[in-house]
Figure 1: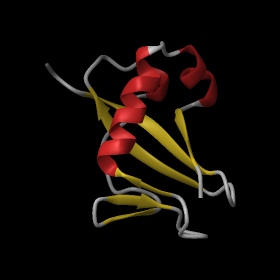
Figure 2: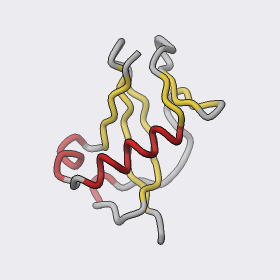
Figure 3: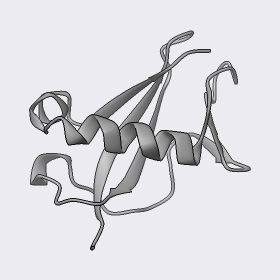
Figure 4: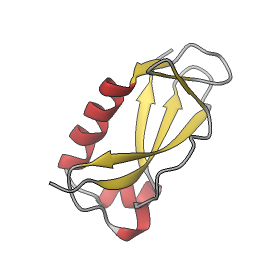
Length: 91
C-alpha cells in the first residue's frame, strides 16, 4: 500500500508551542492537508518528538504515528478545518 503524507501539528498542552511535521499515513490524503516530507520545524531527535520551548512534551515517533493513524481513521473533516491533524501532548 502506498503511503501519502499529511500535515501534523503536535501541540504541547503545557506551553501551547506547536511542532509542525509531515507524516506518512497508509491512505489517500485530501489536498488541503497533504504535504511533502522535509525537515521538521521543531525538535525531533533520538526517536522522540519534544517541545522546543519547555522540553516536557515527549512522544516517541511510533506513538505519534499511531495517534495520527487513529485520528485520520475517523475522517478528514475536522483535520481539514484545522489545516492539519492536531495531536495534543501532555507535558
